[in-house]
Image 1 (tube, rainbow, N blue to C red):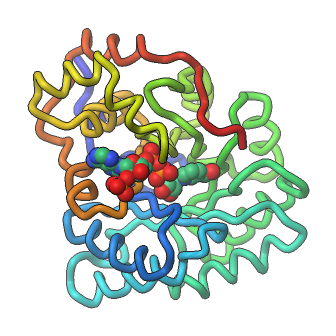
Image 2: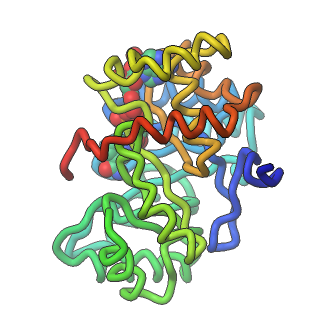
Image 3: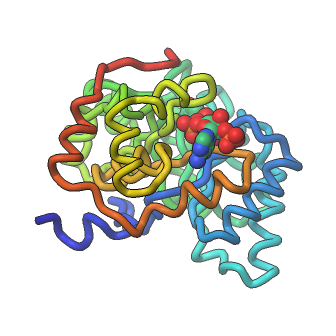
Length: 275
Ligand SMILES: NC(=O)c1ccc[n+]([C@@H]2O[C@H](COP(=O)([O-])OP(=O)(O)OC[C@H]3O[C@@H](n4cnc5c(N)ncnc54)[C@H](OP(=O)(O)O)[C@@H]3O)[C@@H](O)[C@H]2O)c1
């Protein structure tokens, strides 16, 4: 039987902070849409919000977070904001620009968005930002092998708290998850539903359809529940208020061990993106 903490809706990071295990992704939302959707997400219960410098919507995300705090929906301490910087020759400036755009004193988690020129020095900049109190936890995104994980871990004195990678029923990334767990690192899934253009293939999967019918849940909820029970942090994105609420409504049912195995059986090591 799984321990209680395994099913808790937050996870203790190796940085000493706690991170919610279901969050809201904001890729493709512009500032105004991000403002509206993030506020709605916080209102229906999400406490983890994922953005990035690259998305161009940190201003909207920050506006929504500050509005939700002002309206008493949650305190700053209760909201976990993630952003990402691309590796560059001026990572310290990118971190400062992120905080300015968000209008926040600190971000809870800052990731190196993807491998690239100067990523090790950029990661060291994140570690410096932790010391300066600008960032609480740090991690990496789009690093898929133990070797790459080790390379980045060695770059600074802080081991990544989180690795954010593509992860869905057809690409389950279990080997990396097992490897990084030795360092207390948690895997966070982007494209938890397969991403735009791919969700219908996943939602139509016979196994997922069957489980959805059994639990009177949507296919999206079955996928997110599988991710949750397997220890991943999932950050589904949506601009539809109904979907946003639905994706957070996964805490009232539990897939059996046999059903989890059926979900594992869907893995084809098929990624939808190559960055
Ligand atoms: N680190 C990286 O390189 C990276 C890369 C990609 C994404 N990300 C992060 O991961 C987040 C998630 O990825 P994503 O948003 O691209 O893909 P996703 O969450 O897998 O899928 C989003 C798609 O699913 C639809 N959808 C969401 N909930 C649904 C529901 N309950 N029923 C039916 N359809 C539903 C959305 O449409 P509607 O708007 O109509 O709901 C949208 O088309 C991003 O927002 C971003 O924060 C990170």
